[in-house]
Image (cartoon, rainbow, N blue to C red; front, side):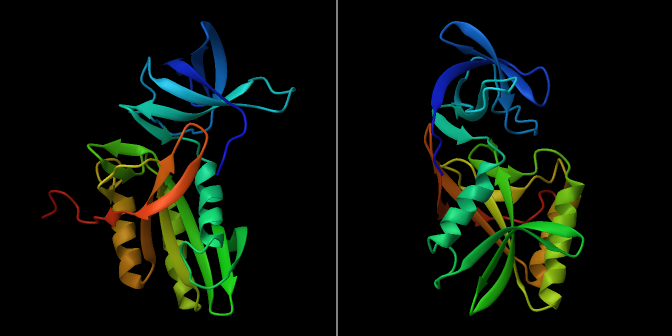
Length: 232
């Protein structure tokens, strides 16, 4: 996944979920934030950020904020790019050994899953979750309670009953993490739902990404730890 027209700036503040103020060459610009999550650990005043310039002259904001430099490491925070990167990765043979056809936004039951993969050997639904939250090189999801995420995981488990394969792919939008785990403190129910889905046969995957100023590419598997801290 490659961005076309980028520029670097310095993050100043974030008045709301949708916009931020960024300094570009000494000028303060209002930019669109391509992630409505909290991202408080990333968007710290003074950090370097990467912006993509829009090709639409009618837009209110000229730039999208897509990437943040956190302690010397680029972290992508564009919530739209994990699905695109996952599709590229799967079509290039990253997940399945045989050639596959990949469809996006395929409806099943009461949910619409990110990817549906077909080949003579399989029919698989794949839900993709972008991960930007990291602490001490441990990646966590979600960064805010997500009832929608719980619903998606539960629906994935139902796919198995009709003979489909079901995958939940966590795309960690940075390099250098040691493991992935549910964010138990933020949304315990999501972690419990993951454990139940795995028990039923949903395949849980976590992969990190090589992130540069203008690219993001899925790279290496990351260990998943589902053990709840301090559980009795």
